[in-house]
Image 1 (tube, rainbow, N blue to C red):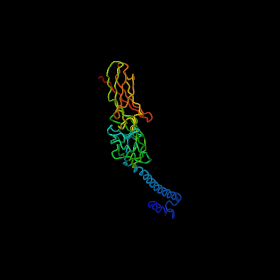
Image 2: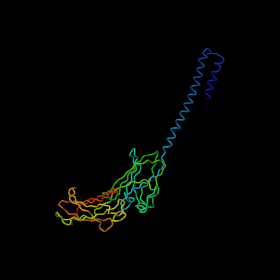
Image 3: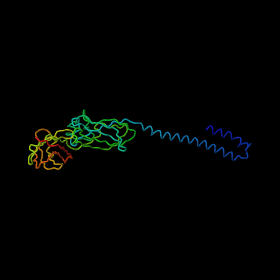
Image 4: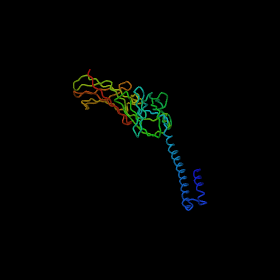
Amino acid sequence: MEKTLELLWVDRPQLQHGGAGAGNGHTDCLTVFRKLFSAVNRRFFLLSVSALLFLFAAPALAQEAVPTRVVVRALSNDAKIIQDPVGGAQIIIRDAETGEVLAEGQQTGDSGSTDKIMKQPHERGATIYDVPGAAKYETTLDLTRPTRVKITAKGPLDYPQSIQTASKTTLLIPGQDVTGDGITLTLHGFIVEVLDASVIDASPGSSVDVRARVRMMCGCPTEPGGLWDANRYTIRAQLLNEGKVVAEAPLSFAGTTSEYAGTVSRPEAGVTAVHVTASDSARVNFGTATESLSAN
């Protein structure tokens, strides 16, 4: 502004008293106004630049990483939490847009409260899984913006033939912790193990004794009339020849928790493996295991 006043003061005598160049008074007047307009424009430009810098600085400040706690739990369908005795579960959190792995680790702990999970009514907002010692995976993400993530759970890790995966996407907001019960993912299936498959006689028409163990994905036990009622399940043994089913028979409760046994007649030679399946279609749980035959 001082520069503008100086320009006006210098040109004032010429405008009022004439003198050198007085015949061009009209031109001088235009020159003064141009200078004034130019000065005002410069000030407006500087103010505009300052405003833009402020506007762009605000988002830049928002880009600072904000620690955000996240709890994830992998559950067994119709049962409890995937726990340490079955190997726990692998948890991976990815940026859903880029695929970048933001966090990865293993769920550890026990299967949680049987009463809260399986017996008590689940009321809205009530804590179900977050009890002392209950298995979980917890991490802290440094988020710079609202981020849509894809979370994947894989387990139970100690039983490769029974492993299943589940995933979901959700939006996470910087600084908004997700704790308590956390984000839950449900793994469907059974843990099935072939404990014994013995060939008594290798000739056609002989029998194969099969004994298997069937548990929930969390390792919880099954038995007829129990909390996980085996009367609802279909458990069968199949004899395989080059991958083709050549004979099968049901397995019945063997008197020991989670164990089932039966005998399968062998219709032909060349049977090399036994395949055990467990099914609960009403609750969408299925499991299987295959074992090579051993001759006694």
